[in-house]
Amino acid sequence: MQAETLKRSVQKTATMQLVGLRGPACADKVDHALAALPGVSEVSVSLADEKATVTFDTAHVSVQRLQVAVADAGYEALKPVHGEDGNCCGGCGG
Image (cartoon, rainbow, N blue to C red; front, top):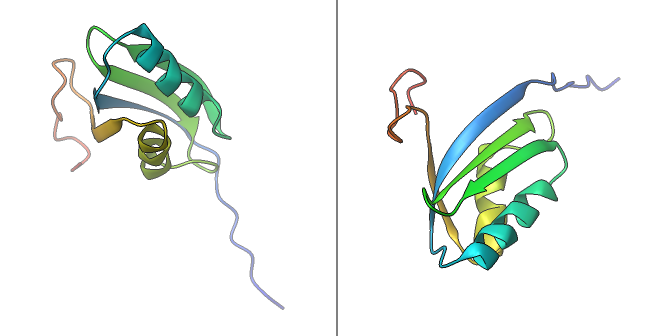
């Protein structure tokens, strides 16, 4: 008998710095790419701040998968940031 591993559903919010956005169409393209992923419940892309904030279910999608979706859309997503100033707060070790 095989043991099955069940992933626990946990909602997480990640903010990623984006590189390469040139206008509203770019922000829309990233928004749609992220929103199309299974497990993503909310997406907000700020062209002015060049950031994407994504709320997702960790049982269905990872931060790395979010970054791949941004790359597939033709842009770059840097490591998630956590502090209000856009820098890592250091609390998660990330």
